[in-house]
Length: 282
Image (tube, rainbow, N blue to C red):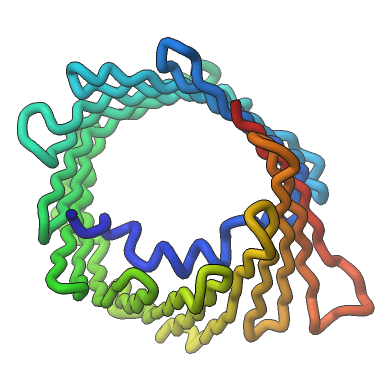
């Protein structure tokens, strides 16, 4: 099995702190799949502070015989996205894709070529935007060996002929434990730990430090599975922000998420956030 992509390194710990929380939002997600294999995903949310409403519609169709996936997406900012991808046809583990976007109101349009390759001990990803004046080229690679993971990510601005990103990562992963460390552009240092204590309890730790601002961030998070249909989430950081979440499966295909963010430093001043999300799948 190939290592994860560079962007997925440390994902288990990030999910502990991000998944299931919808602070300041009323959110609805719907997913469905037709008998012909077309997948539909609709999502909408309303921001309780600004009152802004945002929605999107996505369709995905897979032609398995040709390894082809067609994805189209539209959102309420009136932007259209399209992606055409081919997987495992030219070479096992190789994925080729083209992604484009178009905003009819402004006329803005963009395109991007994407290449990904995964093998037993290596995962390589690259993309290049369509820009005749000089494209921006992103590339990353992750090497894996007996649980150890080493990754590098870079971005090259061909117009100005210079590197704009220079990131390194090192980690170790097993079935129940994941350690991840990273250095971004030599200025931001971060690390995370994920531990599956037992079948019901997952915990995570995150730490980051920026050399320019000397700003340190630290957080602890946990997810506890009450039963097969309900889960509790909690997290706290060094800014005294406490997040709490509750997940309940109401019936097959219907899941309710409740969450709140409490500012411990200004508890009496108010300004705390709540979030409600409903996920439907059929």
